[in-house]
Amino acid sequence: MASSKVSMLNSERRKRVFLGTLPPDFLRITTTPKQQQEAADQQAAWALHHQLVGTSLVQNTVGRLNITVAQAKLVKNYGMTRMDPYVRLRVGHCVYETQTDPKGGKTPHWNKVVQCPLPQGVNSIYVEIYDECSFMMDELIAWAHIPIGKNVLNGETTEDWYPLNGKQGEGREGMINLVLSYTNGGRAVNQCVPLMMIPSTAQNMFGMPQYSQVPVYTQLPPQSIVNAQHFVQIEEMFPNIDKEVVKSVYEANRGNKDATINSLLQMSDV
Image (tube, rainbow, N blue to C red; front, side, top):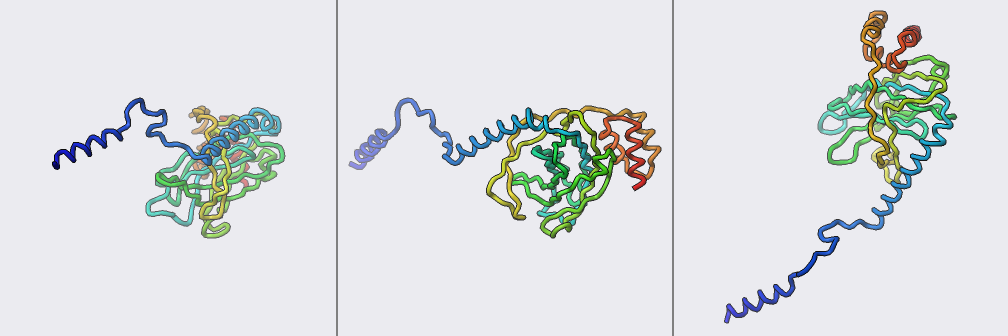
């Protein structure tokens, strides 16, 4: 009697088993209307960015701004381990990023040369330092709004430390070391490719707006412009200037020995 009931139960279960071809969406994660809208917004932003880069941005460019992101000195290490900092720059509508300094902590070094078009009417750059995180959104550590000085626009190469804002307060999060130079006219060579950033309504712990990244172009391989013999000669002429700064100025001047010497002389006189 018991075996009969078990057979009836098994037979009933078999009837409930789905037989036949599985539907196309079987085991697929369906997207919500909100996710579909976000994807559509990203595609629209990509198209807008491509249009800006291809037309109006190039037409409104007045020159090329060279920014060497050398290093930073931060006042605090946020998190349980040493931070992995990287820098994000915004010049006009374009956003650029340096490489990450693994375990850079409070004293990260990048020595990244960014060559970008300077649009008409843009007289400042925005700098943000992030801690790269593996299992959560990258954390904004510090930021600064840095005016482009008239001396830079007049052709002078400057090297300076700029105060950073952050959780510790305005100008109290540390300092970042930048080398700035400017070339009037001509088209910039984007060794650090711009990234399109889409603002959202979300905010991070500092009250700053969050951004979601849409990749627009792949990273271009950097071109080697260093003449070893010239570089050694320039280093010997300026023994009191840090070698990384000399290299950054040399790269910013596209390997022009005379222009590099003039720039370093101006920096020495400051």
